[in-house]
Length: 334
Image 1 (tube, rainbow, N blue to C red):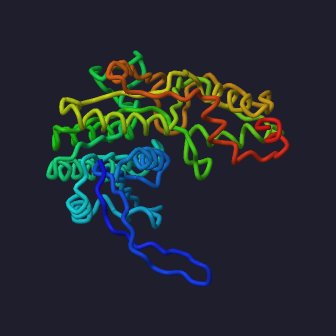
Image 2 (cartoon, rainbow, N blue to C red):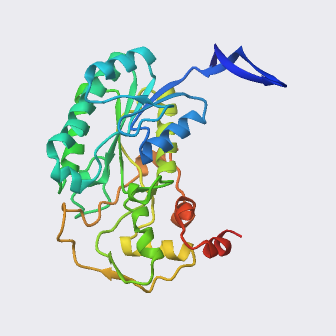
Image 3 (cartoon, one colour):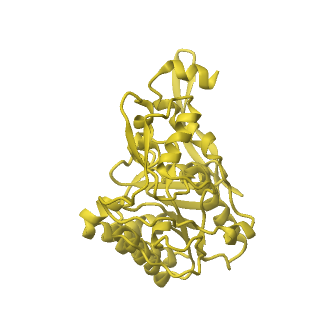
């Protein structure tokens, strides 16, 4: 369903340009994306925007002209955008998601991951919006995978604790909420450091010196495009069925350590991997990580929701712009 609005457009003609008023189709389903400038948020914005949703994205530090500049800690600004736009769905991607940063800045992380999430849930309830709160596999301790939505969380680090507190806060403030737990993400990054997966690419490419890679923690790298598709499918199912709420899990299904991911990246680009060294000891630096927090995704699968991109295909698409040796581009893509 669409509505119609007037929009001013510039029309170019030989020797002149003129301002004209044109009818444009505006989709009637409205969605607000927080953290729309981040890795996941960009993919979620694109997915909804390309599938007949009137999509508004907001960001803070990296807000661009097409996104609203909103500080989620500013409760008045949050109230105003939600009441002005009246979204049917809000996808809350904004978070401090780097475990080691959370350990160093616990108060700031708690403000964003818990307090801002609680307020957003309250405001969503005020306009009857369905909230999708993005959470993490790090709410589990990784000792007895795979984890169902009903399993008892036991986060090992402060990041997992703040996200679990955020889950509780949104569900307390808005019963019409879905919590979507996801694992480590990758996708079309603006810079390699945006993802714990893509950040390994330089170590893979520069094979003139050996690189130690973790071969202890079991991960399930998940493409942000797939998570975005799940968010949209969940939102669309919810529009038809009000019983869609509560906690859900989504994850890629290829189990890999960082060492195995790095080898797969090398293989995808026909690069050598003999300089990569697997380290099987548990890491001693930084925030504690769960050994294997594999998520059981059968609940969403039984609803007919889901999408999975094979890792090698997804990582090649994500990383080829960062390939240093142009000769390899010829062999990989031609």
